[in-house]
Structure formats: C-alpha cells, structure tokens
Length: 315
Image (cartoon, rainbow, N blue to C red; front, side):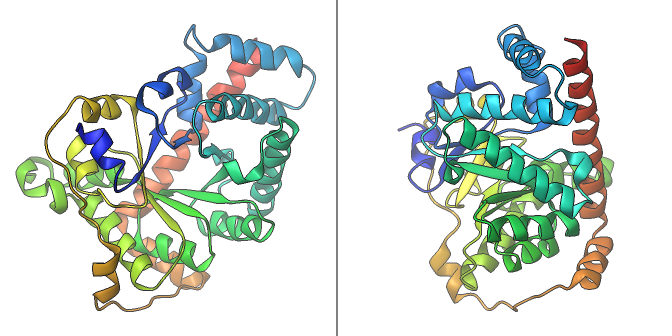
C-alpha cells in the first residue's frame, strides 16, 4: 500500500489546488482553493477559457461580482470531481471588515445555489483575524459553514473553536518557514523534522486541545513543505495537500501509521482557554511568528486578488 492510500485510512485527504484536472489522479475527498491558486490556474492555457467565458457572460457586472463568479465556476468544476466539499475564499482585502465578509460569504453561497450546488458542499474560507472569526461565527449561525485560514497561533484556534466554526486550516509550512528563517545558520534540519517541526507541533497542540475539550471544529493541516510534515500529522481530521506532494505520497511505499490520537488527547491534562477581543489581540501580538505570518499572508492574497482583478478587466 502506498503512503497516500495509507494516509486515507486515518485522515481525510484534501487537494490544495486550482488545477482541477489533476484531481482525479489522487481521489481526494475535498478540495481547497485560494486567490493565488486560481490566479496561477487562469494564466495557463488549460484554464484561461474559463476566465474568458466568465468575463464575457457577466460583462458590465461589478468587478467583485465577476471575481466571485469565477471562483464559483472553479468550485463547481472541482465539485464535479471530488465527492465532498470545496473551500472558496472571501477576498482577502475584506479581512478586517466583518460586515463585508458576511455579505461576501452569503453571496458566494447564493451563487453556488444558483448552480444547483448545496451549501453543505461549500466551506467559505475566511482569514483568522478577529473580524474574520466574528464574520465566520455569524455565517455559521446562518447555516453557512466556514474554513478559517491563515491560522498560525493557538489563540486563533481557541477563538475559532469558541466561535463554533466548522473547520480551521493551521499553516504548517509557513510556521516552519518563519522559524527556519529566524534561526538562520543555527537551524539544524534534522533537529526540527517530524514531530519536532514547529508547524507540526502547532497543529498537534491545537488538535489535542480540541479533542480534549470536545470542540467539534475540524482541524485541517495546510501549507506543507515536505512529506515528513504530512506523515507526522497522520490521524489529523483532514490534511490539505498540493498535487506535487500527493504524487510523492502515491509513489512511496514506506510504512505509515496514525500519529495523532483523539483518545490520548482526552486523557491529557490541559487548561481551558478563552479570549475576548483584547485578550485575543494581545496574545496574537505576543506571538511574533503568528503576527508576521498573518499580516504577510493577507498581503500576499490581497496582492493576488488585485492581479486577478486586472486579468478580469483585461479580457
């Protein structure tokens, strides 16, 4: 049995891509997208026709609506291949605007429904800012499931659990990147591999906390840099993996067993945490890595949204 098939025994495998033509090869349950992945896809010959068709069909509509219709078009194509859910992201430029995020999430669901796709198959992806978490809380109360992304800290995870969001996406690889860059020449890769990887440690802590206290929010590790990070999180609720790493797993026959264990988490001695807005902002501020990576991630997704706007205007 290859490692991909072995992993599927313990964890729901999700494909992290805008390239839906690759999905059938790996048979993931769900798929995730983001503005950067969609931007990359529509610049290829395979997917540019989708961009052209969407712009032509909705010419004269506001740019933000055309953008959402393009995202939904990709999502619908993905859902014709995967049996589960797709995550579709709210424009990162709205990361600090609760009202606008709620409105955009509701519109995305309405556009999917117009395509005959049930809301139960969609996760509205929102940045894990305080404002984003509040927006997700309201969307959940309206029966719209959310995926809280750009999550780098325990405080963000606790706040998401308290808001009863459907799913969180802690970013393993970006956490790893920050610690490696900060350590510089002092970094010893072997000492920070597997369970000792800082990104893996972060997700493990969150998973154990959620399972210990019976928090139903799903944990989906994301943003992987290598297969070792994935295998060290086998047993996590979900893992969203790029096509390149899915391919590596599918071509590897080394043994793989579950690492994370909900029963063991139940038995652990953990303290229940809670954050109001001031406490959340202070805890995030105290975590230099999370503060920097959250800001950097929002800037990068917002920049790609601007590039996507320009492509839509240029057709």
